[in-house]
Image (cartoon, rainbow, N blue to C red):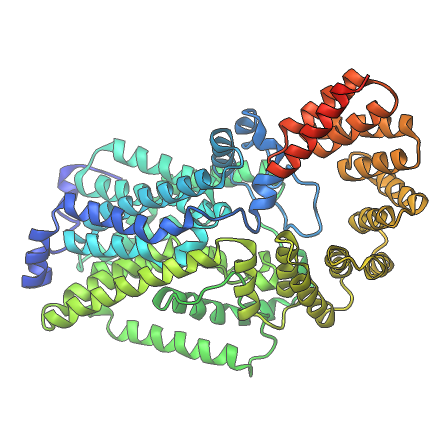
Length: 633
């Protein structure tokens, strides 16, 4: 694995911009100086993502950020290397087996320490990471193509591509852009090492490769890209056996880094890969027959990234006679045949662009690890889109040789279309209601999309709309206890306590272990002043989950309503010990202290409640109660 200058002569560089691109590229390169190019790339990226900065926490953000107490301590930075991403959560029924992404966990921890739960700060950091990744893509494409305009156009398209919204506007979608911060330099520095020599570049590339894998698993496919780079630049007189020997020799260090990562991953997770519980009973034949359909859809989303969604209503293909199998398979075979026929006419740029598309897609074609509704996720296109944008920019420059005006118009149309689509797609990820409205549109027959839209409406206190969606979800799947449980919440919000109690009981008849339904049923009994029934439901929850802050609080206020202030104080003190920032529990505890004559304790707790309250009207009410207690003898 020599890196001397003599080795450089056996690896011919690509043609310069002037030879490759003609007059169009020459004039473009004269105008698009590096400073101008970078300014336009950064400005364009920030302009199309500006409306993402006001977005809320959505989807997994509510668990990974809002509901993740481990982010509150700096110790989580060390903890990230010895635990999986979801180690903070006790939920096991709706979360797949764990991911090992320590740099992602560290990113979340640093952001929480800097911004707390201030959403604009999180969105700003996501956009900053994406912008840096886009700039790195510029330097990569400039190195690979030798043409500054290809680098400019390719990286601009990368910065604007609508498929990236899921990775940028969704805060928890950051692992792909985060991995690109290391994946792109790993390739760039490898090329520099092979062309210019210098062992420091190889070491830097290997370190970056390892760090990229600690962000997300897909960058492990980078050696495939490096292999294609070596093949496409090997002299035509070199035999295939010698080419393969050279590739193996060059990639041994990367194989060692990958092995080290996998060993670390195994030591933490206890496995290298897994099978999602929802695919455990799906035959492997069905999974493999679905792969061509998934590939074609990913290619479609690269080429025409419009009206994208979190969910696309996908199901596994069970028969070879299904058009979703034989049509995509036929298209892929035709595409492969065309590439084979014209293989000698395709230069290194085209082959490398194709490798940059295909290699990072391969890991996500292991469909066994996904819930069937999530087997197509646009965030997985973040790294493959580097190759796609490189390919588009290269083809446009070549088109300019014979159709200069057409090339210019085509470039402008693509940039404009991508920009508009990204701006509109940011709105989809702006809040939970918009996100699940789009999911219902793309997957109207899915009970879960209607269910999640119902939850989003509950969160927005739009209870009538929530009830409509949850009734539709119940119609599509009448055996889901969680649907009945949240339908009860919507009906309670509408003042229909009888309906709420009936649906809570229906939820428990389907799943007696659904503690949330017990807790909600107790709350409905409390609202009907059936304190005895409420007390029993809360005790049921606490028997199984003694650390339930919500049930502990509810039991405390129920005991207070029953006149048992001593019991209420005991439960509420435990509630605030479990969750010290629970302002409502502090307030209720203060009222119970007042009821037994402990004025100073009551004042202290209500002052605590006031410090945690952000709603102005509620804060005024608490302040009035505090002044009333302080005036009392």
